[in-house]
Image (cartoon, rainbow, N blue to C red; front, side):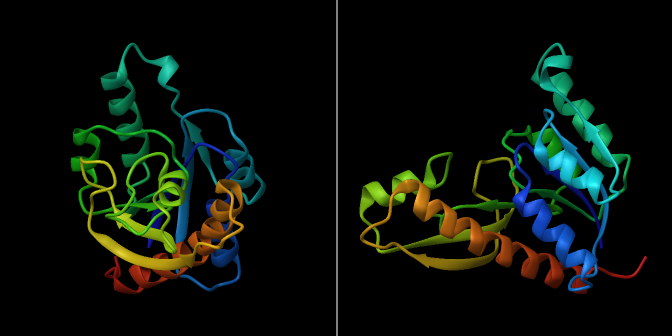
Length: 190
């Protein structure tokens, strides 16, 4: 399965995928890694010998222009799947439609509970005893796409937002690799 990975930050999810590919645990080809700003994730890709690209919103007159530039950049690699691995931008409906059913994202909660940017904080505020991570397809509505996989993470009495988020991220990396492996096994041979 050929993928393009989009990142915005440190690239720990990307690193988990890079490691799994290198170790032969998943049958995935990372065609390229793209970002919306210079970040450690791009450096991780370069160190692994993976092609990178940058599509900055500030280089475009408006969000529409940025979305179209990003869409062209991603499409240029002809991916079977597009992975948003800590990609902290919301793309428009036209971008989603261009890759309909092929964009994969992670979210630090058991969706549909706690969608949005503050899922871990929201879980703690609601006093839940279990939260987790979801791997889902991206649709035009935020955090609303079909769920591909989930993993539960217990909320401990001593948890802070940062501590809980770190445990969720560890589960996220494992679940993401497992889900990509399953998706790769279901992709028809070209």
